[in-house]
Length: 129
Image (cartoon, rainbow, N blue to C red):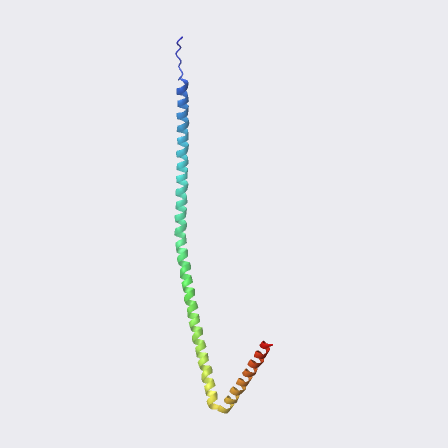
């Protein structure tokens, strides 16, 4: 009995199903790769946009920091100059007073020296106790 069957042999059907499954899996892999490529392209674009936005901001912050540093240096320089001028005026005033009132200046200096010596002696005694 030789029957002719219109269907494919069982081994061939299994092979066809395996090929079809492999084709479907290959399609899914390619679809996933395309989605991943698209997501990475989008992410890369966003990173480039952020980098482009950050550069001007960093430049502006850097410029502001430099300006603040310059202002600080100028303020210190101005204050230093003012202190020098005040010290010079005080020195000139003291020299003028000594020239005008030498005896009073000498008595004030002696009294100040004696007061300082007394304080030093008092402090050195209390630190030894």
